[in-house]
Amino acid sequence: MRRVVRQSKFRHVFGQAAKNDQCYDDIRVSRVTWDSAFCAVNPKYVAIIIEASGGGAFLVLPLHKTGRIDKSYPTVCGHTGPVLDIDWCPHNDQVIASGSEDCTVMVWQIPENGLVTSMSEPVVVLEGHSKRVGIITWHPTARNMLLSAGCDNQIIIWNVGTGEAIITMEDMHPDVIYNVSWNRDGSLICTACKDKSIRVIDPRKGEIIAEKEKAHEGARPMRAIFLANGNILTTGFSRMSERQLALWNVENMEEPMTVNEMDTSNGVLLPFYDPDTNVVYLCGKGDSSIRYFEITDEAPYVHFLNTFASKEPQRGMGYMPKRGLDVNKCEIARFYKLHERKCEPIVMTVPRKVGLCPEAKLEEILKEIKSLKDLVSSQEKRIIKLEEQMSKVAI
Image (cartoon, rainbow, N blue to C red; front, top):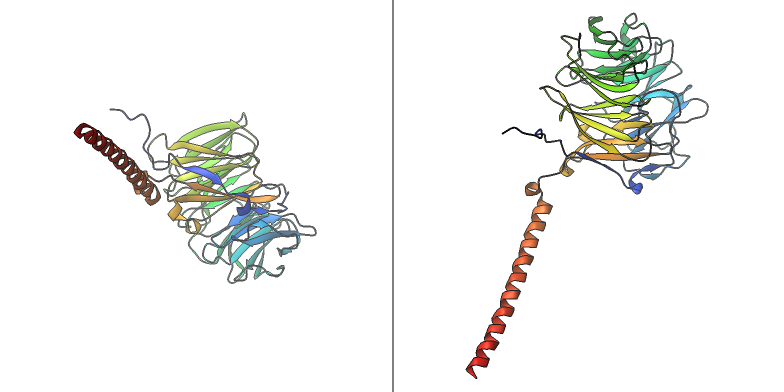
């Protein structure tokens, strides 16, 4: 018998927005024209790039600090130009890096209980770019290694401990770099560039090991990320400005493994990937929805799961790492959606099977007890009636 529906644990994943009292209100989210997420999250803090006069700043809020955020709340404000990207260190929840239009990268140590006064002195300033720095990403496995990419088309890998540039990749990209992604163990990086090419680079050797020109025909920005199995997932635009999702094998990048056409819209699709569940979430800038897909090893490789839709368009999006999730509530992902004036958490959950859920099991038992009690009481009434009839017959 042929299966009509594909078997998957994540077919019924659903998203739920937090209640108003669980949101972060009255935040002036940055209006800078740059396609980064504007938000970074870890299990302790949420950091949001905000509008700031006379330079660039971002907020660092403890996760429990929900509700209205006072205008005088302390910020991290050491940059002299707008902040374009921020990223929390995966090895230390108190350390965050920021890249800015002032051509510098700064690394900050947040005090143990959060900010009490505004912070303008970074732990280290990394200077090496000649144009604005729009991409910041920490090495996934090596401590104190930070990658930055700027509009000067160069990528620099820094040792944050010493403040030195260890590797500089200058002549690999002829145009602006849209994004950079490490693979799972940090041995390779993949980049998406304005020349419509995807490149896979070995930073230690300083050479391009795979390249695909015109990965997406459209002129709008692309994104490329590594998956757990070493394949590359890209989002971009077709020649007709339709948004696309494509999957590539690094060994053979002549043709994509699959291409999914989605819709016609201007918003750049930001991909967020969960290597444990193999689910990728696509959040479009200016969209009001999050689409999510499951990636498998068999054709057609990419399976649409569902869409979380809301009313308000998103200005940016933060993605909580796995260790910050409440797994007891079957949470598999949590996003922090930036509106114009607030930040709203969105929780993605896998529904439990009824047999495994203690609350549902308890409810079932209580229902059974009630129905048995009802049955007993109706039988007792019947016995009383029969006894009355018997007494009448005896008389």
